[in-house]
Length: 389
Ligand SMILES: Nc1ncnc2c1ncn2[C@@H]1O[C@H](COP(=O)(O)OP(=O)(O)O)[C@@H](O)[C@H]1O
Ligand SMILES: [Mg+2]
Image (cartoon, protein in one colour):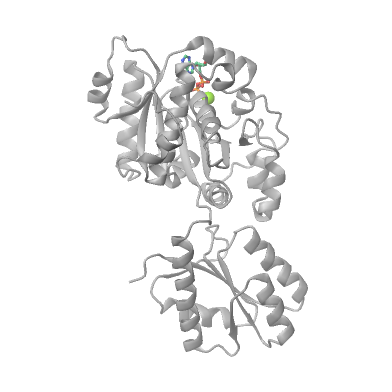
């Protein structure tokens, strides 16, 4: 039994060759041949060399470099030693000679599968975690949590690379929260999705602010088509290969885009406060996502923001009403919170010792430790899980 589906793109121009490869691949377990236009990242690209060999090698080099494809197998009507040498320099490890020999293809795919297994099991290839911060209501602190979680994550001892994506259409506030003057936004990226590679993305994202790369929301929709969920999936999938953490401020929207981001996220943080309307919304959101098949349980974590120990509604009341445990509480601190927003800095830049700042640091540490599957690690790192429920 194959342990993973292998997504394959076939790009050939000799008539009938693509179908021939497709027929052979379909007879091998676990292979998924992607139709043209499918934006999922292929694990494998079967590429036929054309007339302009230099340009072909440049294309392959950029696809591999940007991690847009996992691996490339080449085929050509005639292969000479110069082409083979150039291919090996580019990082191509396998070739199919023409006419295609079925047995050769099978053996080559098995070798590829083995390489993939080893790569997936090895450290070093980034497989960034997506953390989606959603609000159960406007004004509960979704942006505050997303921004400060990202800034806290970036403080981790291993200096993880962090990108904060503002998914709020039109009303994205992340740049204001971090005094950031954007020249690009994800509208630009999704419009130019075909050009997406590591160099392009690095240019677009510019320098990190308080350790965090920022991808703001479009501030006006003129000239942009709304990106479709598949394009968003491609963009976030691509970012996984470049960043350790991708934090999304998903706001309060419940549309195709936010559902797609929920589907592919590793953690969904549902921000709520201890008020009846908010808890009722949290309940509805949980049930809806659950009915739509978006849970495994544990992936959605409830955060109670603006927590006051002596509030009328207790944490126990909240947990009873939503039938879920509360993952984290962030204390109420209007003064520090407003000062941070007004000065456009993370909470810790106002007061690193304030309980609200420590709480966000603790939440980041807890999530990071969970991802590493090593609860001891966070203690060694000296992070303080301040408000762990
Ligand atoms: N833990 C907190 N304590 C006190 N005030 C908070 C806290 N978190 C957020 N706020 C305040 O709530 C308001 C809304 O926050 P914001 O992050 O913009 O929410 P949302 O993104 O959900 O609309 C801001 O004025 C902010 O200062
Ligand atoms: Mg907001």
